[in-house]
Amino acid sequence: MVFDKDMLRGFKFNLIDSEKTIHKVIKCPYCSSNLNIYEPITSPCSISREIIIPEINEIGYWVEKCKQCHKLLKLKVHNPDLLKNSYGNGDFYGFFIDEDYFELKNGIVLNEIEEVQEELVDKKIFKLEDVKNYNYNDFSLYFCNSCNLELESKILRKIKDNKSIICKEYYNYVNWSLANSGSSPENIIVKLNIKCDCGNISNAYAYERYTENVNLDLEDSLLLVNVTKTLPLDKVILGVFTKTNIMNWLYKLLIRWGLLFDKIYLVSPFVGHQFLKSNQAVETWTKIFKFLDPNKSTIVVKKAQLNNFKKAFDETNEIKYQDLEKFNISSKFINESKSKNNFHAKFFCAIKNGRCEVMSGSSNLVEGPSYEVINFNTFYDNKFFYMKYLKPLELDIPVSSNMNGYSLFFDEDKGFKINHNSEINNQECLDMIFGY
Image 1 (tube, one colour):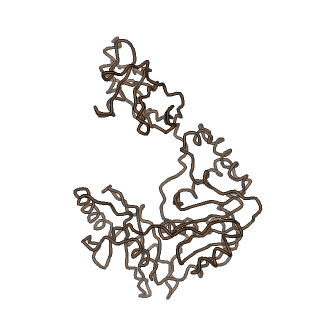
Image 2 (cartoon, helix red, strand yellow; image 1 turned 120 degrees about the horizontal axis):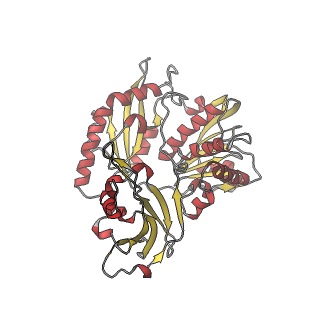
Image 3 (tube, one colour; image 1 turned 30 degrees about the horizontal axis):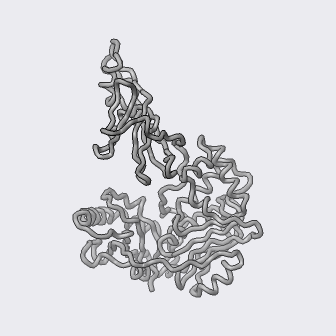
């Protein structure tokens, strides 16, 4: 069977192959802001043993309005007629494929619109930031202060046992919130009562960022930040351990610090080691990134380490790192890292008003089987901590963050039920988690 172009265009929408969709980041020629465009691509479709509808992928122009400067732009794309299906009538301005197949809003003249020249095609590049998770099964930080039994596996079982009631209450709250105006909580905080085999009772606190999404998977998303009445962390993180053990403790501390502290510094001359392959070097960096809060964290390394990361990224991805920088979608952690050459100090710390926690020792930011010295300390005098750790490296002490927001609090003592007392302000919440 022979299909002419007009007949194929009638089938076009049904031939869209979502696996072939092209994601482009477009740079506005007027204000240099980014626009994201998703180009639908078609594939052949068999409707019987004898009849196959061929693909039809046409190049044409799509008219878009920049959301930053509100200028009209025209983009050369695949199947601009199919893009119309993704836009409401108010945001549709026009497309053109040929003299017989176009649609433009009244008053729009295609030749008078600036054409976009700069674009970046996303070829499934490595994501520089990713969703963090908490490893409840290995490298425990929290142990019973009576019998030294690890508690994190018990905490995970408690989450699994109660996730249905928490999810139900969360669902009800989100639906109520959507029906009412006002600001939303910043986080959800879950307090669990953990009974050790010896009878000792601890309170575990886990959190997740609040979203108006009722599809929660608490086993993967709840992040543990503290457990009261446990062995002090300076008794756990103390001695000689493998690099892998130390780094996995650090990942857990970064989760804790991201919620409870105002500023995080990772100070290490080297990230990885010189024998890592390019893909391993990128993985080492990006694994650290996903546990960091981009608004609170600064990495301090030797200058060559930043160049080494960019080189390794270029060698393992079809898109070059400088292109990500050009389009403002490169890693904030790399862009805002501090580089120094005259240091060999290795410490990782978090700072808030009246409390500083620091893990320090002989290990760089790298996993591995070899052994290093490590220890943990808590300081309650910010000025003392600044003079001893930060001032020699010309690092700043942070200004205290705004504590005006609030979180949604699920308390096991109240059956995880949400009521008018379940919204807790941030300062009260942090004091409770620390056990003040």
